[in-house]
Structure formats: structure tokens, C-alpha cells
Image 1 (cartoon, one colour):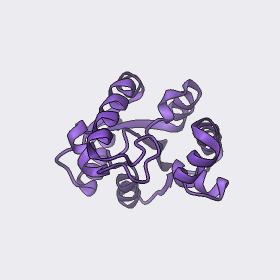
Image 2 (cartoon, one colour):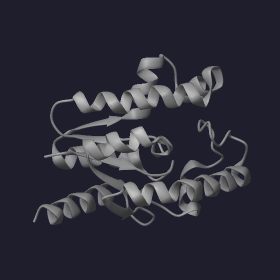
Image 3 (cartoon, one colour):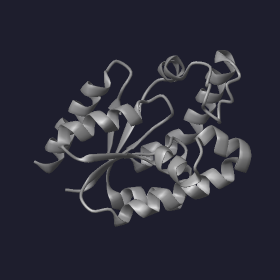
Image 4 (cartoon, helix red, strand yellow):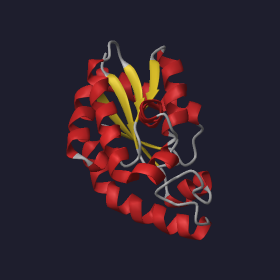
Length: 175
């Protein structure tokens, strides 16, 4: 069985859904942001502040590429902007089934609030965070659409419900 790669905007639920899905499938879950933090020895916001987005994206790409060498199927949660690099998109396709966790900008904003701890939102307040989320979502939408094998709407679902829907869709794909 190939791995499952979860893509989508910040606030779509990738990390929590990855844990729930890994539990459903009895697989391991990995979060690329957490792997970057381990390699960098600091949290993502600190990495952005000290080294910039470019350095973060380089480390993110290296982490994603390293997953090709992992044994066994994984549930992989990737950062929302990872899709902006063609090399990352190619690796994600090679890793397995790519699932876009899609949510409306209003849902994303409710989940991320003012954007505190989210470097691309800057913690500059809810109104500013909402505008930036909408802008990023529009920029990334074509990339998510083209890359995704499956699309799951997360607005009205709990992480456990999203995980069960992915399992159901994967079973349908196999059959």
C-alpha cells in the first residue's frame, strides 16, 4: 500500500487528521513541519524570523524528499505551501495518494484565529489574517486541484470523520 499525503491550507486540519487516519490504518503519521523543527532545532515561526521563508522552504523540500526512503506506508501531513515547489509536488505524487483537505476561508480563519504562530499570517489580527488566508488559498488552489487524487471537504467534519471518509474513499479506489 502506498502512503497517503495530506495537503491543504493552514487550518484545514492536516496534522490532526493525519493522527486520526494513522490510527484508523495502523500506520505511522509524520508532519513535515515537525520534521523541519527537529532538523532546525527550533519552531517554524522562529526559523522564519531568523532564517527567512527561503531557508524554511529548502529544509521543507529536503524533509519531503527524505520520506521517499522511509519503509512502509505513512500518513504524511505537509505544510500548506509545500505545493508551491514543483519538486515537492513530484515527490508527493511518488509517495502515494494525495488527499486535499479543503475548507472555506471562513472555516480556516475560525481555526487559525489571528494567525499567531503562523509566520505567513504574522499574528496581525483576525481581519488581516482573513485577508491573507483568502489570498494564499486563491494562489494555491490550482496547485492543490492539479495534485490531489482525492478531495475531502473538512468544513463540517471532525478530524475522525475526515479520517473515516479518507479510508472509505481509499477502499473505493482499490475496488
